[in-house]
Length: 627
Image (cartoon, rainbow, N blue to C red; front, side, top):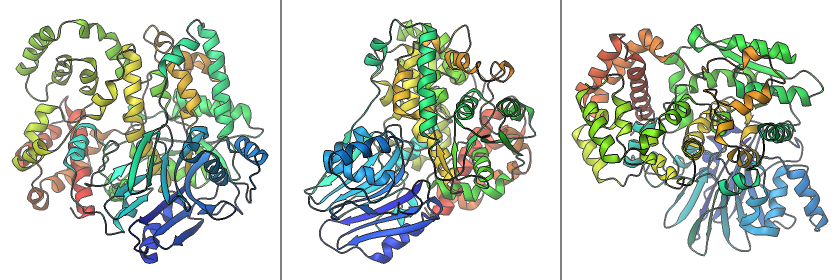
C-alpha cells in the first residue's frame, strides 16, 4: 500500500519541487519504506511506498520503456501475473516483478480502458507524455481513496486530503452540502468533500483531463439482471459450491505477498470465513488478530478464540481499555474530514496490534453488504409490506403518531421512516444520526440559512433510484454497497490501518465475487430469520456452530458507557466551550439539552451518545483544521 500525489499546471507554469515534496511528506505513514518523484516542467508525480511485492525493483513513479507513460499507484492488482504473460506475448518488456508495471503496459495497449482488465484494489494516476493526458482511476468498490481538485490552471490529486492542502490551492471553506450529509450520516459521501472545490473520485470511475477538458466516466457497475439470469435455476447447494470456489480463489489471490501476512479475526461470521479459507490454503499456521473490551455486550473474543483454536492459528488478542480523549485528536487528524463512526476506535487498535507482527492483513469487510448481515435488513425486509400501502394513508396514520411523540422518544424515528413517499426515501431515512426534526432544532439560524442555499442531494436516495427492478432486500444491499460501504466502512479501515503502515485486503470485495453475490436469491441470504444464511451454511464446514449461529455483535464500542465516564465531562467542556459557541454552527441550548439527556442515563442514552460523538468529532475537526 502506498501514498500518491501530483500536480499538473496545464498553463505551463513549472511545478515547485518544494510543494511536491511537502505533499509527499504528508503521506509518509502510507508508505514509510521509500519515496520517489517524477518532475518534468509543469507536471509532477510523487509516491510513498509500503513495500509488499517486488521489494527490490518496484519503486515508483514508474514508466514504460521509453519514458512516455508514467504512473504513481496505490493498491494491489491480483491478476497481474496473468496480465503480464499476455503483455509479454504482445511484445512488452518488463524491468520489474511488480504489479504496477503491468498497469503501465496495459495502458499502452488500451488507454484509459485498461481499468476494465484490473482485478484488485487501486487508486492511481497516469501521465501520458505524448498525448498530454492525465488519468486518475479508482477501483470498482472504492477500497482505495483518491482526492482531486481542478481549477482553471491546474489539476492536483492525492491519496489524502491533507496533501492537497499543502499546495495552497485549497480554500478551507466548508461545503455546506457535505456538512449536511455528515450530520445525517456521520461521514461525507463521494464525490463531496468537506472543502468546497475538492472532490473524491467515486468508486469505479476514471477522470481523464486532456485538451483543456476533464471527463469523469464510470467503467463498471453491478449487473443484477445478468447475475440473476445466469443462475436463476440453481439450488442452495449449487450456489454454495460456487461461493466456496470464488471465495477460496479471492482469498488465495490476496495471500500473494513478499512480506508476512495475517487476518483480522473478530469472531464474527465474515472474518471467520476469511480465516478458514486462509487456513485451508496456507501450509503453515496463519496469524490472527483480535481485540475485545471489558463490556460483555461488545466483546467477541470468546468466539474469536474458538475459531482460532479450531483452525490452529497463531493467535494474538488485546483487551481495549482505550483513552478516547487521548487518541481522538490522532484519529481525527488521520481522517482529514469529519468522520464519526465510533468503530474507528477498535479498528485503530487492532491495526496497531497487527502492525507489530505483519505488514498485510485480510479482513471480512463487505460480508454484511453482500450477504445481508445487518440487523436493519431483516427489520425492514419484514416490514416491507407497509410500503405497499398508499402513501397518503401512511402519511396520515404514521405522520400523526410521529408528531404526537416528543423528540427523543423511542419509536419516533421509526414512525418517520414509514411516512416516506417511496422505498428509496424510506431506506435513506432509516440511517440518520440526526433526524430532520432534530437537525432543525440543532442548527443555528445562520447554518440553516446556509443549508437552504446549498445544493443538496441525499446520496442514499440517489443510489436507491436505480433499484426499482430489485426486491427490497437487494435494493437495500445495493444502496449500502454504493454509499455506506465505500464512504464509511472502507474509509474507516483504510485510514486506521494506514496510520500504522498496515495494508488491509478485502477478499469479499473482489468484483467477481460481488457480482456473483448479487445473483444469489434473497431467500438464500435471509431465511427463517437467519441472516447470511448461505454464508453460514458454507462456514459450518470449517468452524464450530457455536461461533456461527449466535446474535450479531458488530465491531463497535460501548459509547454510552464511555460517556458515563470521563468522556462525558470532556464532551461537555468542548461542546459548551465559548470557542465552540462562537463558531456559530449550532444552537447551544439544543446541544445542552442533548448533553443533559445523555447524563440522565435513561433509555435514550445510546441515541444521544451517538449524536454527542458526532458533534464532538466535528468540533475537534474544526479546531484542527482552522476553519
